[in-house]
Amino acid sequence: MELAKKTADIFKESNTRLILHNFYKPAIDMEWKYIHLPLHVLREMSREDKKCFECIGTSCHSVADALEAVRLGADYITAGHVFATDCKKGLEPRGLDFLRAVCKSVDIPVYAIGGITPYNIGEVIAAGAAGACVMSGLMKCDDPAEYIREFEKK
View 1 (cartoon, one colour):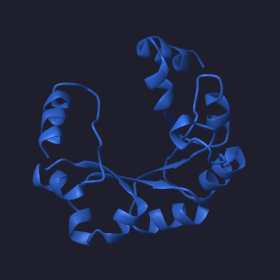
View 2 (cartoon, rainbow, N blue to C red):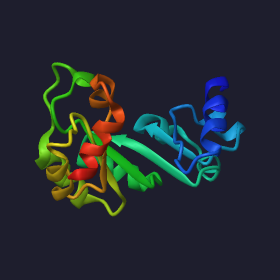
View 3 (cartoon, helix red, strand yellow):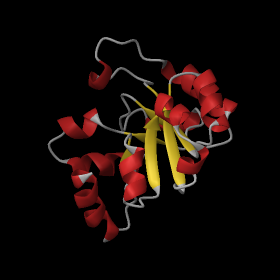
């Protein structure tokens, strides 16, 4: 809660939307309107708790997950992991066919996650994704701003 409040204070002054992750009860307590949840947590939420948010996202790993997420009221999903990534070292990536199938199965935005780089973002968008999430690429680069500019060029 303390970290969420400190972070929220920073983002209140910016044009960037902060989406808190996982801990929806503290988010409700601080009247934060954006949350991203593991699917199993979204399953457990009451209708009343869901009404506290303007935007709920969830993580999906199959078409069945994506369909369930829509039924549970998700506004967007992240689908992954699409490509090999250090965040999921040793786990086989699901690939672009997986991403394409998830995107076709739902009518809410799908954001790809897992091994997304400036060099494969075009394939991700061509598969139907609304966008992508990048984690390990940013953590490994020397200049995050330059890395983001590489995406903007694509």
